Length: 146
Image 1 (cartoon, one colour):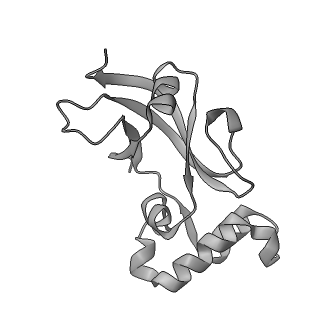
Image 2 (cartoon, one colour):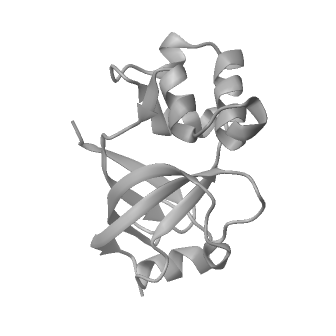
Image 3 (cartoon, helix red, strand yellow):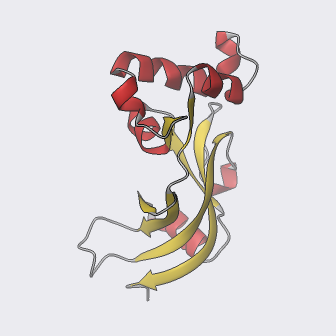
């Protein structure tokens, strides 16, 4: 059931491009921190309740470069570990900074899903590794925007 809000902090450049509707996705490195927030077990349980930190690190390394570990695809890695992308995030709260909520520039945007792959260098993707890609939809509401 989708009902939670994912919170992302962005630097001004990417915040502004997303607010303008130009940047349609956000990237996060495949780390245990983000894996625990963006992945779940196929039965919707938390991956950290099922797998220890060393296995979560192993999952991340295989998602970053599945070919190195002789998997055929990201989907195969997900299937082997019985995990999937969380579907509970209906919206994303995008913030520019860490001020209090009544002061920080922010907006709520539709969350159109999560995937793994290479990003767009024009939108901040750097390097060769796979990353989590958070896909944006329409802006729903904005706060403290000048």
